[in-house]
Image (cartoon, rainbow, N blue to C red):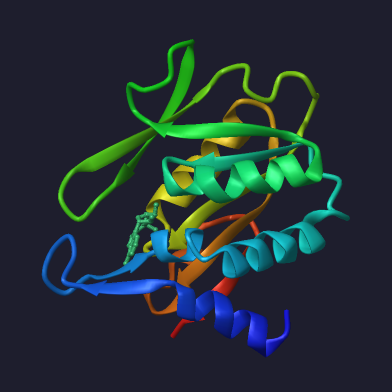
Amino acid sequence: MDSNTLALIKDSIRVIPDFPKPGINFKDITTLLNNPTAYKALIEHLVERYKSYNLDFIAGIDARGFIFGAALASHLGIGFVPIRKKGKLPYTTVSEKYSLEYGYDEVEVHIDAFAQKESAKVLLIDDLLATGGTASAAARLIERVGAECVEACFIIELAFLNGKEKLDVPIYSVIQEV
Ligand code: AMP
């Protein structure tokens, strides 16, 4: 991606200090989504990167991963699978817990989400990689239901938190905050 396009995407993301709690700089991607030039450039960049990966599915993490993942899946002509927070999916699920600062959270996927294709090649996507807990649980889920997580993709990586060390799959991030 050329530096102008990268700057366009980066500058379209609003930063909200101290949200949802003091000390967190929240990356607000709603301003990227309602900037049609930036959103289109981002999706086109991801299509260009992933069109040669021979992917079978995109799996997006609840909820902002759905926005990027569903658009990308549609452009690539492949299926989209939601990885949701516990209790939201109606059919039989498989779930994975991951630790938070205090306590734990849980993500789930439908047991048959990738069943149309044996050893389906899946790209995992979310808006942001922070500590890596959510994405590593999501990647484990993909493998547990018989698919292969070939890469995890993020619009923003908070590289100073070293989240990628928690992931056993290759990662790609469009923007890295160091
Ligand atoms: P983690 O499991 O620590 O990698 O956290 C990643 C998840 O939390 C992603 O789904 C993000 O959307 C969200 N998240 C964490 N930190 C931020 C942040 N600074 N700004 C926006 N979203 C965040």
